[in-house]
Image (cartoon, rainbow, N blue to C red; front, side):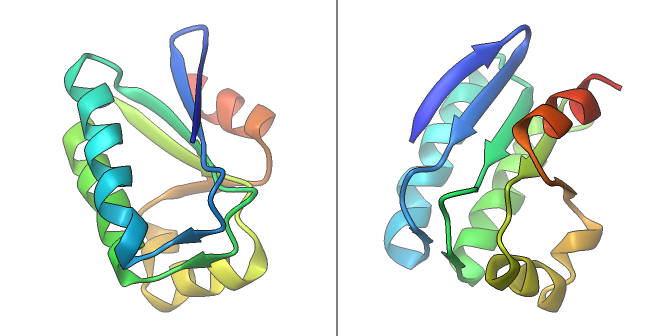
Length: 110
């Protein structure tokens, strides 16, 4: 995972193709550590992720809860198979999902 800062937004670019039971624990721990350090405006770039299971979705929900009402989290670059999982679990109603990192930065600033 690559981590960059753009203004006051932390961008996490996931580089692994799978966010599943094997990867979700480390993913969640790393993001929660960043949130606990005061980074409350997050973009998750999932353009290289082609599979997410329920553990991956659960990890993202945990991070979103930790961000809380005083922050924001936007997810971008979701491919169609992963988007189907978001829809199936109705997580497309919970998360802000946009096409590109630029769109995410605009969405998080508004």
